[in-house]
Figure 1 (tube, rainbow, N blue to C red):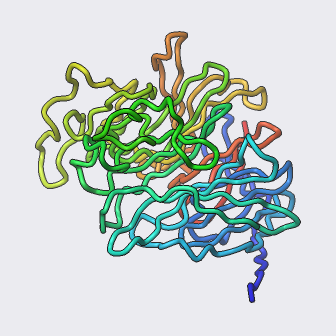
Figure 2: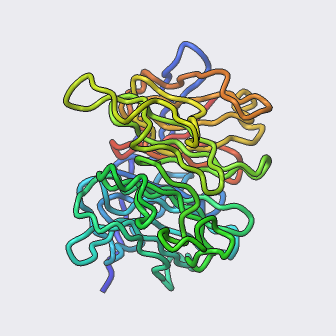
Length: 358
């Protein structure tokens, strides 16, 4: 029998001033564990994944949290667990989820979908279990985004560097899928025997931000570098993004550069590199009038350097400026969600959900 729990989350509506400028963080909910992913159900309800394996709903009016389900397929190990959630543009009331799953002695990043109806998740269907064969608890990815026809999901290198250049594994890749989890026939490697059909791009380390901008039809990602060298990349069909052959980061054990070079011919160069690392998690390209100064800009959460990172693009999709918001809040920002009303919500590893206020 499933037990549905209700938690009263305090300090709702408190506004925390975190800048000498106008930016503020309004506390919406607290008392969660690690709210890894968020997706709007409607104007007033937010579906939330917690990394330890629980899916729940937050009422945005009063901050109350209600447990919906704890999927049995989720294996919360290391950096893994229940990861992203995203509302489908293809079918009403359908949500996609990513999570880590044990497969024999390995842990893999998986994708599933389910329907949210009358306060419950029904019809849970596992669509894809990626192949890496890795037993580490590191670098699962994993974010979800959509264009008008396809699902994109990111998969980290699983802590095994060589996976980045190995197209026989999904690890270290961004995948492009049909809504049912199968590979489209026009994916770049469907006719390559030594590559997996689902791969859209490869050479990634641990992309924890992924966003498709419908206005420009561009796919953006942000990923963790090793020690320095976090990257923002414009993702193109079939391209190699270098890891671990190219990198701007250093080894954890000493001041030695990772890889052969920072850039090489035939490898896509990042649009932006962060040295030192900000430790990025989540990414949006904001379109709306709720925050006029953010319109058309990329916004990501920073874990290590605890802020909202905002970068400005020119007409050629080059990054020309950077701004850091809410640095004094001191929160490891995990996920960003734009509500139907155009408001930005963000979750933190301390178990809080905030609304950005300008």
